[in-house]
Image (tube, rainbow, N blue to C red):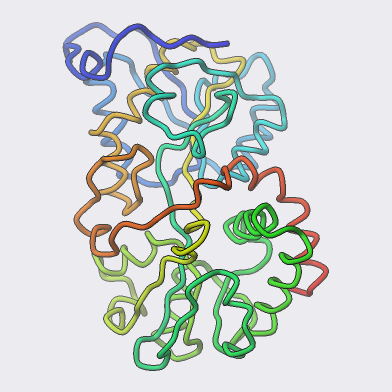
Length: 338
C-alpha cells in the first residue's frame, strides 16, 4: 500500500518554485481540457515535480496500460465517470493508497473504500426543462418514467457511460426490477431517438424538439458562461431541477484519479493526488471547467454558483456505478433503449 507523504497541504503549496525537480510524474489522462495545463503548471511550481501527460480515450488508455504491464511509465490515471475508473480497477491496474490528506479531504462516498481511486470533482446529472412549456417538471429521476411526460424527454443513448452510471445508481437504490421499469418508462417518454452528447439534449429544449432533458450540470453552465451554438441564445428559457432532494439526493458522477501499481514515481504520484485536493486545485475545477468541487466547503465557481447547492446522493457510493454497469447495460438492451 502506498503511504502518504509527510507534509501538509500548506507545506506543499509553500515549497519553493525554484527547488530542483525531484522527479517526473507521468499522467495518462482522459480529461481533454486545455485549461488543466494551468493546474499542472501550478503543481510543478509548488513542488518542482515535472508533469508529463498522455491523453486518450479512457478505454484506450486502460488497454495501453494493460499492454505495457510492469514497464508502463504511467504513474497516475485520470478519467471521467466512476464506471471508467472501476474498469481500470477491475483490470488490476490500481494501487491502494493510504493518504491521511486524501482520506480527510475526499468524502467516503467519493472514493474507493480501499483507496484505489479518489474523486477530484463532481458532476451532477440533473433534469432540465423548458420554462414556457413545462409547468410541473419531474422532481426525481423516477418521475421521468411517468406517462405524463410522454413524448417530452431528450436523453442520450444507452452506450453513454453517464447514463449507464445513472441507471447503475437506480439499480443500487431501487433494485433491478424497479430500474428496468424506470428504463422502460423513460424509453416510452422519449421525444426522439437518442442522439448526440449532453449539449445536444439541451439544444433540443431550445429548438422545441423536447421539453425535458437530462444532462450533466457543467454542459449547461458552459452555455451560461460561453457562447455555445444552439444553446446560449435560448438558455434563459431553461430551468433545472436537482432530482430526489426529498429522498436519497441527486446522482453525482466524478472525475477520478488513481495511482498505478507499477508507478515508477509513486511518492510523486501521491503528492500530485494530494495537490488535486487543495483548495487551489478544487477551485480550478470549479472555475475552469464548471464542475462541483469534490472537497466539501470549497467555494463554487461564480458560474456554477448560479445553479446553487444541492443535496447529493451520499448513500449510493460511486463505486456501485461500476459494479452495476453490466446489469445496467443489460436492462437498456432489454427495454430497447438505443
